[in-house]
Image (cartoon, helix red, strand yellow):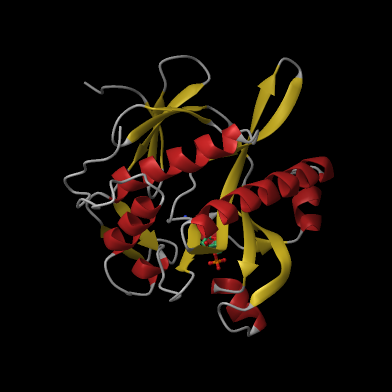
Length: 253
Ligand code: 5GP
């Protein structure tokens, strides 16, 4: 018999029905995928680290007044979250050129951008999450102009927070992706940060060496993904300084 009702299974996470209406349990898998799941692997312990790191970023955001879906961590791989209606967009913030932007514009990876740039992709795996202009988003009714203004403001606050936290531990926040969800409070709709924030969805480079500490390690075969994520967790104090192997996690708390 099923332990609880599965609501949705994605590439890196599973959502189960939560204990109360309006809540879900988010389970972090060890699966790593890239290039729209053309490249796949199972990285032992990745889910444990991303659960902790996403908790760390989401609670930090909440402390500075940025609303997120995070309620509490339940165990090594699961967190309780608010159920939201996901806006079907990937909201990407870039501080330095990399990845698809570097390719599209012929820029060298690492080129500083004149200011943080927010862009949107339409969330559809079968289409490869295509970049879309605001005009499309509004015309197709995925979000209103007001929503987009709110989403850009939210994304830039997340960027300021994340860039500052990362800078404090010697890491450059090159870019990241967030997802945003709608919640209703009485008759009012609010947009809040949803999904996850982890090295799966950010580009993180060591400030001194430009060593990559994010999912590009997997995408580009640059070494051991767990070593990279463990390094991020260790610097942020989410792992003890000794940095235990995450297959035998001795995480703080
Ligand atoms: P790019 O467009 O350069 O491939 O990605 C920009 C940023 O958004 C990177 O930090 C990348 O990790 C993140 N990103 C873009 N699409 C996805 C996605 O489908 N899943 C995840 N986890 N991150 C994404």
